[in-house]
Length: 130
Image 1 (cartoon, rainbow, N blue to C red):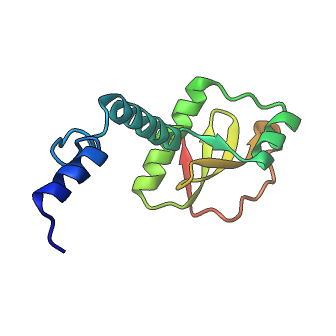
Image 2 (cartoon, rainbow, N blue to C red; image 1 turned 180 degrees about the horizontal axis):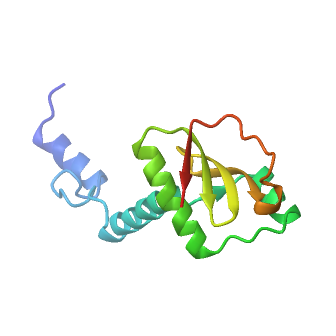
């Protein structure tokens, strides 16, 4: 198809000058910066620790409270486990034992010191003591 000047001018008018104006289709700076903020937020979310519904129930029924400082210790422990290629880890923080999926950074279950004796932890391939 051959486009002559008349057709080009008509298309240019219809497109709002987009054929001559390279900025028409450019993303706005605000849209770009908000995308960057969302992306950074999602990246930070993945580095935070999550608790499965089962783990939340165990924390409540066993009256286990995990402080922000303990969460930081858990996060560092998961970083170490990930470096070693561990998939599911037992993480010991103070007097709390946690079974954690390292890749998803999700606590699967939690046990306090009162229930640690005679307990067997299965489906783990590593342990980190903080």
